[in-house]
Image (cartoon, rainbow, N blue to C red):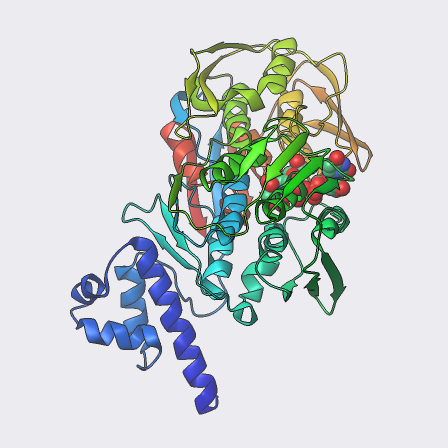
Length: 512
Ligand SMILES: CC(=O)N[C@H]1[C@@H](OP(=O)(O)OP(=O)(O)OC[C@H]2O[C@@H](n3ccc(=O)[nH]c3=O)[C@H](O)[C@@H]2O)O[C@H](CO)[C@@H](O)[C@@H]1O
Ligand SMILES: C=C(OP(=O)(O)O)C(=O)O
């Protein structure tokens, strides 16, 4: 290693330590105290001007309860599940991954301070936070680790972008909308994400063209240029009613000093979260919750605001499924009911018995919540196929949960995932646990139940929702199952295993 390489590495380690310390909400002096050293030594470590021994690094890891650096190959996490038991009690839905990532990207629009309250501590959020920090944004977690304060700098350092974190998430595509109001030329790494088959970014390019954006995708990067002159009144017609594409158009419109009409917009939950936040910034949005949005943008946005992202309907569906397939009575608290109505109506047709509490508002004051109690029920297959639709329709991310529910129900269910080319295939892993799942083609599954679930050892599918579906089936399966390589679950769920254990699930975590 050359002296320059070594300095760069120390600086990188220093900035990792600073990030972990700030995310714990502790000062340099407090960390110094935990390590029995001085505040100035911590300042030197964080600025990369002090050599570090492996011993000191592992003490810092322990002091920050972090896993900053591991030596050797990272050790995958596995779960041992002893299933076939009923669950009991109440479990609360967290705020959503998809709302959080949209809001994190939107915070780039605001020169003021954005405080997001009750952000889910999930890997997808960490990745976007890492990208934001790498370009100079100050992102600080509160001492209890729940709230995130974000302050962008006057000038972003886009050349320093954390490529690795950016490439691991698809949400990086949502930097286009806010950045085109700030920069005339910029580059972003290609978007990544779960293994669900090809997902086009073309609708984003079409949606952002009226704002003067031109993108050439080459060499693993989007090269963006923005034309300055554009009419005050803009009209955007989305070619797909996608969630992130609507968010991109909304963020571009928020910074366009005129009125933008967005047609064929998604009215889905994460889009609504974004609209509520934009309103706090002073951007007027007409038509929230509909497919036509009229956005009254602002040339300059500088407001200190606080917003609490709404509860996650997909987590709600995941938790309800845990109760359904284990024949348990559990209460899932804080379910955003507007985004679960079709799912519950479909489940009701299948024979699920459930009760709802009166509605109450979420912390954002806008989203309607209820507590849902599911009662042990003998399910039957629905008469019609189950298929998703853009909202208002059965949520595309909730569809995989119907595979394990259908396998628990009496009769044949046809599940049609027309959206993703290779999400359904991951659900065929349910056969390893005893389910009768036939793949008719890449988009259609014929599932025959009820299943006499039995334990098995399975490698975790490389896709978030199917991974959780397999875990939930293991809770239903008598005997011991092993789910290998479950790190992907943390991309979208905070402490899922631990929270299921609180309901009485028997799950042990281990590493090789
Ligand atoms: C960060 C985030 O918010 N991610 C969500 C968002 O991703 P996102 O908005 O990125 O979803 P995509 O744009 O990739 O759409 C998903 C797939 O649906 C297809 N498509 C979508 C809409 C449409 O009207 N017609 C159509 O064919 C797309 O071509 C693509 O193959 O929406 C997806 C669909 O709800 C969800 O699974 C993701 O969890
Ligand atoms: C497909 C999903 O999300 P993303 O858009 O982050 O890949 C998901 O949440 O299931």
